Length: 162
Image (cartoon, rainbow, N blue to C red; front, side, top):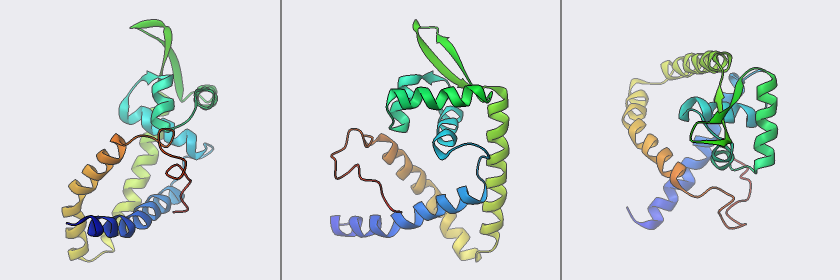
């Protein structure tokens, strides 16, 4: 595939992938929590306990913002702070049992909604999506490996509309 074809594929995929995510999130919000808080909770669920600085890096936010985010989640009993066993001066953040329960419920609802939407597609469309799933996972891994917007140039870090 040439560079032009890769660029065209990116332009075709970006709005669809973004809108898919937003449509799913709108139908199953994590009640009473901001999108930033929900994202931090998901990172902790997916990646396990981590230092506050690591969370800030993963979420592409500054440390004061991460601290405020975790403060709110801690007050609601979703996250807890613990000393880092490798360096007692550092703090690890992790989900509480309640936080895991909340996320499990939301993910279950999202799976149900996505299952219903997939059931409305043709068998050919479902087969195409099934075949594309590993490639989409690989794409996500590539995106996760790229520098965050804090590391990007100002033009690259602009907030997208879709």
